[in-house]
Every structure is written in structure tokens, then in C-alpha cells.
Length: 497
Image (cartoon, rainbow, N blue to C red; front, side):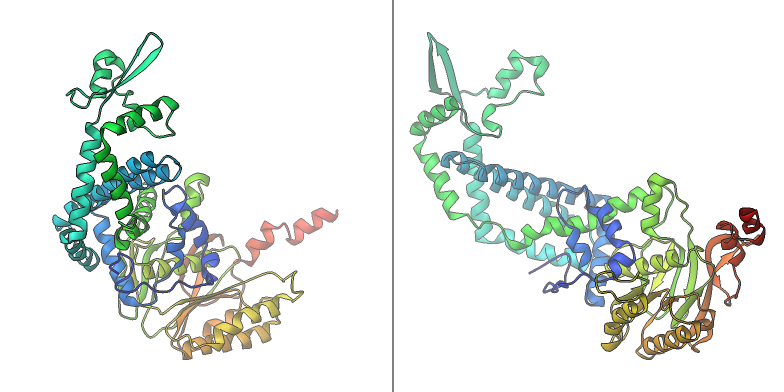
């Protein structure tokens, strides 16, 4: 089955949502992307591609979607499919068979218009991606098939005949008279426009509206149907013959397109505030970015006016792990999250929150963020952390990107250093790369392939929320925290005096 999300067979979705979605605040980001979209597409963002081929396949499609001509044409297709769905919903609410058949004709007509709109877009060859090319080839074959040609021919004829029907209702001496007025050239809408010119935009034929038939309408249609038995017979046969008229590829396309278009809309909203997105360069072993920021924080800042501090960094091919140290509340966890988001959106085939980015291929994303003690299990924080770490280190995770945030904080420093060193050695020996956020300065020199980064402070020891290649500093920012919580000698003395 041809798809704009997967080249070839769709990958099986993970049954259990991975921890990094919550750790990177991706749940919040995905909610912001999809909340007011017409279709429920949240789950598509929780299905991470299993290989680089799929990532590159999506990335090329997204670059096509960003073109105005392609985006606008696909919006027309989505509108037609939305109308088709509305007709289907209206049809399913009805009990009267003839009314169901009429709504079914409209439903199929919208489907055909959607297919034609899609073909009109793809014929322009405005796309460059393999995905759109494959879909165009498939669509051309489908539209040339006898199956589609017959469907289009029959529904077009039925709809034209349906729209040509006219009923004249007359009321005189307490009686209604129903007459066939199909031979009249003037349409009902023309009559309304002539009689009520000031309301011409608001008035339309009641037979083109939705909802249940009133008793008068039902009787009128019943009498009318006696004079047009052939049409209603054909409508019934059409209904029976084409119950499964939709091709799975067309049926799945609105959600697949929405995956890209919803994210593009989200991107543009943030770009209007001056934030940047870029196409990540992929391949190689260097991981780097300029102007990298936390997307969840950036979205919140739209309403809460929180500061969004971008960061630049570079991890060379021979370097495997960043060990990030620095003062508390200095932006270490925020930087780790932004780095995880960078890798995630690259894997999803979408643009990333940065001015420039280079991202290698990683097989998967593994995270371990600090947790509180478990009330349910009664386990202490250290045991809780080890139980979460165990499955990460029991399976072969070669080529993964690993983010560890404040591990072993309740253990004695000496023990935490030994365990932290073992964790770094394990992932490095298994070909993984990543970042280890820690209060243990000793881990910054724990392995030859580790590079030390630090959350920096300015000349007055205030947090800048910037990270840089620097050696760990033992007392960095400590005085800031003491002053913040009013714990200096003078402040304590004043309290007790």
C-alpha cells in the first residue's frame, strides 16, 4: 500500500509509549500541534520510524508540503474529504432509505472531487519527493482503472440528475399540491434571489440541507418518486454496489497529510515570534546545532512570556557523551530536553527547533530522568532509578541516543561516581551517544570519550541558561542558591535575632 508516512509496508506501532515522550515534554508539544486539528492525529506523533529510510522519506515529503502550491492544493483535497465525511455522518443518522441513498450520492461525489483535486495537484509536478512521486504513479493507475472510471461516471450522472429535480409545492384552499417542476429552467435558488434579493447569500434550497425530513417533505418526495422510479432504482443499485468504494490509500491520506500540515501550522505560529526552525542535515557522526531551544518552553512562552534562551553546541565524531554540570536551575535539564527534541523531530522527518542543525542517525532514543520515591511500591528513589535503568542496560542498544538526567542523587558521592562511571562505560562501549546531566563533577573526566559541558554564569555569578564547553567547577553558582533561599550567615542570623 502506497503511503506518505511509510515507504512500503507500514511499521508496527509500539504498544507501550516510550518514556522520553514525557521526559522531553513531547506530550505537551503534540497536544499543542494537534488539539484544534479536525482529525485525531495524535498517535501518529507517538510512532517513531524504525529506520533511516523512513526518516528521509518523510523529510523529503515535508519539504514539498512547505511549498505554497502543494500545501494549498492538498488543503483543497482535505476540504473535499471533510465534506465526504460530513455526508457520511449525515447519512448514518438517517432511517429513511431514499434519503440515505441521496446522501450516499453526495458522499461519493465528494470523494471523486477529492481524487480529482489530488490528481490536479500532482500533475503539476511541483513535488520533488519520492513519496509524492510514488503516490502519483499509484493514483494515475487507479484513476485509469475501470473501477474508478465507472464509479465517477455513475455518480456524476446521478448527481446531475438529482440537482436537476424540481418540486413545486402549492397551497390553496387548505390543501397542498405537489407537482413535478423538473422541466422548469429556473432553479429554486434563483426564485429566492428574485423574491428576496437582500438575502440571496443566506437562502438555499431546503432539499440541499441536512436533517430529518419534515412530514410534508417526506410525502412530497414519496409522490415525486412515483414519477421518477428509474432514478430511485438506479440510486438504490448504486448504494448496494459501491458500499466499499473507497480505496485504502485515499482513505488514509487525510491523516497522513495532516501529520505534516498540522506541524507546519504549529511551526509558522512560532516563527512569527522570531523563533527558528531548520531542515537538519543528516548523516555522518557529528551532532551540532546553532540556536537550539526547548520547543515546549517556547510554546508556553507565547502566553506566559517566559524567556527562551537558545544554545549552540557541537559533539565531534570522536566524542561520545556530553557530561553536563553546573549550578542548580541553570538550564541543564532544559538543554537536555531541547537536545532530545532535536533528535526526536529529526527521526520523525520534520524540521527541528534550531537555526542550524546536524544530526546523525540514531537507532532509538533512551532516557532516564530523575524520579521521586514510589508511593505505590514503597521503594526508595535509588531503587526506583535502578529498576528503570536495568532494562536499558540489559538489552543491546547499539547506536541509540541516551539522555540521563540527575541519576543517583540520593547515593553517597563516592558510590554515585562509581555507578555513574559504569553507566557511561556501558553505553559508550555499546556504540551509543548522548548526554549525562549530573551534579557529580568527577564524571566529566570519567572516560576518554566524554566531553565536559557546563551551564554557565556571568561575571556576577548569575545563571545565563547557556551551556558551553567548560571544565566542571566545584562551587559554581552555590552562592546564588544560598542567597536565593535566604541561607547566608547574615540572613540566618537576622531570622533568629
